[in-house]
Amino acid sequence: MASKNHKATDFNDLCETSLLNVMEYLSVEELCVVKGVCRRLRKMASRTFERRYAGAVHFDDLMFNMPEIVRIIKCFGPIINSVTVNGSIAWELNTSILTMLTQKCSKLKKLKLICYHFDKPEMAIMKTLVQHLETIELLYCTIATKHGVNYNVFLKVADELRELVFIGRDQEVDLKFLNKKFSSMQKLTIISARLTDEEVLGHFLRKNRSIKHFNYMPNVPLSYGRSWTSSFDNIVPRLTDISIDLNKNIDYVYLFSSFTQLRRVVISCQGYSEPIHDVVSQLAKMNTLKVLGLWKFGFRELLTLPKVNNIETLELRKIKSLFDLKALSHELNKQWGHVKNLYLDHTAVRDANDIEVLVNSVMQVKNLFLCDLRGFFIMPTATKYYLWCSNRMMPLNIFVDSHYLMQHTVSDPNQTIVFQPFKDRICQMVNVICADHL
Image 1 (spheres, rainbow, N blue to C red):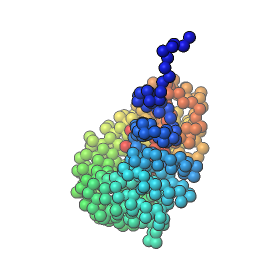
Image 2: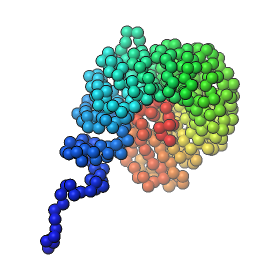
Image 3: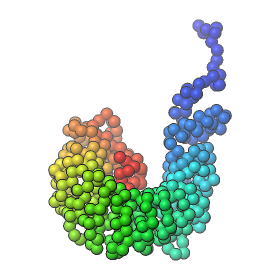
């Protein structure tokens, strides 16, 4: 029998903690609806959004999700500080997104654009949008100008820029804006895009004393001499991260001997016909070095490289000659015993049988990243998966493109081996590997 003292609870009687707990179960679209109910819920919805996403949002499939994206920007624009947009083939949608970001996101500091096309409207908007950005990432974008591929139109006004990441589309790019002095710039990454004037890098490195992360790996073998790379003599003491192509005109043993704080180096051997043993020997002497990436090298050379004890992360990409996983596993156990994180691409791993070799033979590896897979990659069956888990004593995280994980029916987090998607879907395709994942 109901108590005579029972009193119905009014909405205003609910404590803030209870309401916040309820909001944790709401989707972003539902938070947008709740935000328009009253002042109290508006504040709580904003707090929930900020706590859940830390001000960072990712927008893709613009043609299908545009109404939801518009609501999110209108509702939470003032607290959004980081935006990733995967561009649409409908260019007017790209224009609309940039316009809204300019109007609504006053605290925006990081902008990442993927597969975007810039024409006159977008370039005009970007001139305003980039003025207060600290990080700009342009991945696989295109631009329409009379004088070729030229992003100087808006990048030259990015006065507060600290990081620029540019992943090209195998084209030659004009980035003369780098001739300007960016006193706060700490990171410059240019991958798969050759500069029209590579001497601009020399000017940039000489002017910017704050640069710590420098990555330049063009899509074709380099033909320059020592002109711009001589600038390294002035900046090597403070560099912690570098990616470059080896060139026969440069004394890399001398160059790397000057580094004192280097933690990560990725070298591409596409234009280098000399053995890399001397270079790796010099790198092996660096106690600070933790991450080593080797691109476009011969597999046989890996088997005879000097021992590098301090490397914790090893990236092997675009291997040119026939790859033997069993031989690699033997070398990992013998020569690279401290490696905990291993990156391999389609030149090394082709199917689930190749993963099985690594699972059963490389016991010290804790994280296996399968990058840039090709074709119809079949994930292991449930039977194979449970067998691997029973044979493996040490836990192993295998990171794969989410497209391939959809084919995998087993996702038991209590197992020794766990398949997970990449945190950033685009990073697996490019050279920016470690900082965002580990």
